[in-house]
Image (cartoon, rainbow, N blue to C red; front, side, top):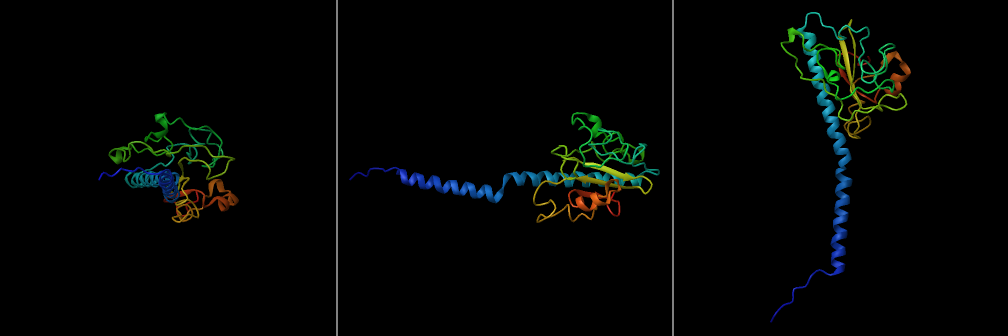
Length: 220
């Protein structure tokens, strides 16, 4: 007796396709690739700012007369705006829209000799060589909107040269690490974002940026 091999019926194929579609949708909803990528970029931001913080701390320890502004007349070198955007006059907010983006291809933006976006000369002989090869830049790099903090994606640096304190800022993008998220890093960093001494702005936007540094209040 011979047996005829039967294929799938149309209904069976439709059922299989339907199940696969449901599984694919579930995977997308559960894993959320866009958020996973955002979390990866945020993790890179944590790593970058931690490396910078350690490098500046080493500079302050090793150099007998440290200068956190590399001789500039203001201890603010945000980008943008800042030394690669608009004039430093008026101590612009780290997360505004004034000024132009520095070209990422411009090596000067990432220079570690005090001319880059962090105004610290890591090539100082007392360090025995720079602790970092180049200054990191935000993995997304985009301007803010409406002059509001927390809407752009770039790193910012500011300092108090008299007290030898500094602050580094980044704007996180994942729902996991942003303010109010399950692993909130912006609202729990202890910073108050007191840029330019504008108290109202500090209160409103205190939790919209991630702040690290050695400034006691992280309110530079």
